[in-house]
Length: 108
Image (cartoon, rainbow, N blue to C red; front, side, top):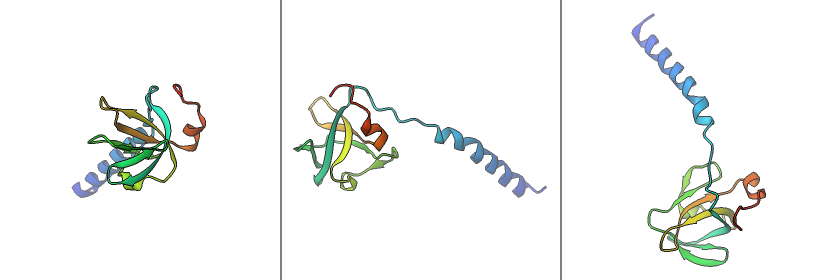
């Protein structure tokens, strides 16, 4: 077996071995996250539960697959859970899957 074939085989083994751990990552939404609906208005301005609010600097928005998205990619009326920073601005937002949305919010 040549060195190139051995290297490719080793790389493939490492890729296959790491795949289950990547798939097993669970999404944890804090229990104190508030529930609501969201839509993008303009730039960093969004509407949460009918109220316009500016996102906190560095706000992180996660879609239902837990990927980071920009505010312009928000689907209008999406159900969310979110956390506010010390200034009362949303800084962590999770778009909910249908299963997550069906669960009662612990604090609302």
